[in-house]
Length: 212
Image (cartoon, rainbow, N blue to C red; front, side, top):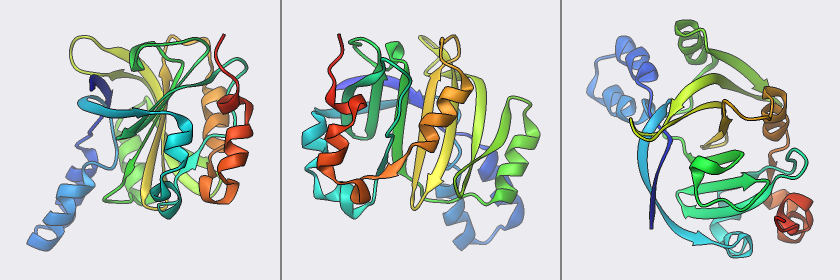
């Protein structure tokens, strides 16, 4: 079991939703919706480190129609998979944890799917957040956000997308040699594992080639 800091919770959507209704039913929705847009600063417990093949053998991955990236910048490969929650670490070398990788992808259920109006309200509040469109999905690009608990932490740039009932957070350290364009290309490469199939995923260089 490993405890690390990952992308966490913003209050902005909850404030938006609270201003729209005070009914008990909608406040129940509010309790969930404030988890939908995330700002780095939270702790989670990572459990169940697995191999990619074990991960892909889980029928739930196909039932839930999880998406995985099919492209990474040169030299970057998958190095760690956690199944609870789903977090994938990609790097150009072996790394011990989230703090040292090149790209992190967090996949979690989205209890609330923000509308474009919601995203505009959030992006309008902060100059380092803007709306981005990836395929048919709208998301947020956040630049230079503090990731993790107060100590230690790192500054990250991340994209958050909503696909189906899930939210995908694709992040990299702000000091990275990678560019925002690289992060966008990773987001654009997300494909349904159900449609790709296990054997195809395992054949992709970013999954089939070992580091070093």
